[in-house]
Image 1 (spheres, rainbow, N blue to C red):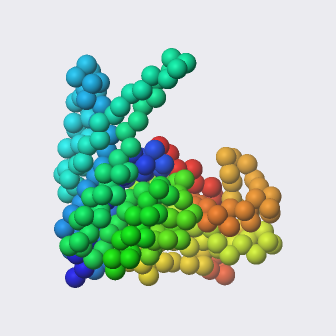
Image 2 (tube, rainbow, N blue to C red):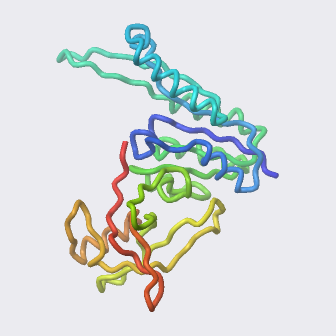
Image 3 (cartoon, rainbow, N blue to C red):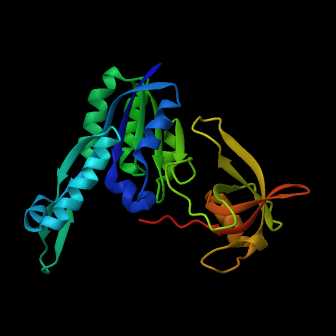
Length: 259
């Protein structure tokens, strides 16, 4: 089995659609690639000053960190720093990119597979360096993902459609699914692909999606917008119905990742 390491930029994922993600499902995803996990690091900002002043905030923060540890992750804390600008405004920074990159490079000596949990294009050089060492490097993210990072990694997992990582709300009547809009023909219809499991090959394709069944912010859309969504592999949340000509998407909406 491949020896694996997981390196997650918590701030990047949480503010870009990953709020409420199940870290245990990310471990399951990595294990499904034929690996045994040796390292699992979660890099996160810590505001020690606020925690000292605000007991309620401290309690919530500690519970959040305990939840991450219970999912099998080692937490690497990055202290928040505040800077006073010339105009009197305050800038808050807690960038863990460098810490994460250095740890990944050093710990990769004993690893075969690395999962990067971030959509930040600043990790491009890290990905290339790891690949040059003969490592397989995959990435998982949700929204605002660098297109270069998607192309550079060996495989990119859109976290919003990987089963179990984010919950999908159901109404009382119909189960909802998420898929990627593809193969739009410019004739008012296209097809959706979904993930049916954790393996790279676990892809379900061919779910018919007509433009009349799709809404964005409650509004219908033009063919031009429909085509644009396909080109950027937009994620669609929908219900499935079995029609005479196959599975179709109904009550579909353009998925908006929450933070």
